[in-house]
Length: 341
Ligand code: DAH
Picture (cartoon, rainbow, N blue to C red):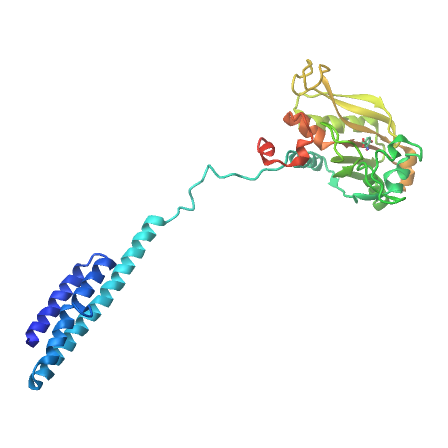
């Protein structure tokens, strides 16, 4: 055993360390050189201990130097190999955040929400603002002020969810007309979208909770011509530029005269089809000139100001527009149904 032999062992070890291609190979090299029993350098160290004392200091220095060089080389190579492995996996696993994943499911607006937004958009374009009222209403606002007398069928306990003698879930958005008139002087141009409730047994066209959009215009010199022009503009924006409307006499306690508005069928262009039940016309809303008594209840002088009002059902419009046969689907919220729109 000589210092030169120890240095040569170290040189061999350094070459093997440099040649290790991954952490496993490096570990094999480490054991071969520094392994507790079989390591070449470990065994050389044991031999040094058996040499006669005069030889030991030089051999000991040579041994320590060889061991130190090997240990430093092992640590360096180990760090290098780990950094290489990390860089390789980073290269292989990066994600391109700019790639569009066409498989991803996107959220959609509910058909009723879409119709509500479309109605709002059309009327905002005509200069209307959006008004709101409470879903829990008083008997007075829901019925009385709207000229719906005590014995009117609309007040029948069958139709209304009463919460107490005087409180109920509003059966229509018409009470927002009263709240608006009492809250601001004419000129008034508002729509009032919102939820409404009736004690109906659910069937394809009846649901205990549904939506309405109310409209109210009060100004000087308002006539049926204004009502008709406004609703024709609305019908054409909503259902297509070629639509016509027709007004049919009807009765609502809060309008005089009252009329129902039909739009020419947007499926068959008026020729007659399944959607319009072969009639060529589809009923889309109720309307009329605001009853003078209702104006008075709202603090409006009917000799100075006149108004028209209307009310429509977004569920019904959504069913017509999207060909939905059973409107109950609109409240079930089964995504397999909703995904179609
Ligand atoms: N409130 C009526 C309903 O629930 C709809 C309606 C009809 C509203 C005529 C109006 C109107 O403002 O003038 O069926």
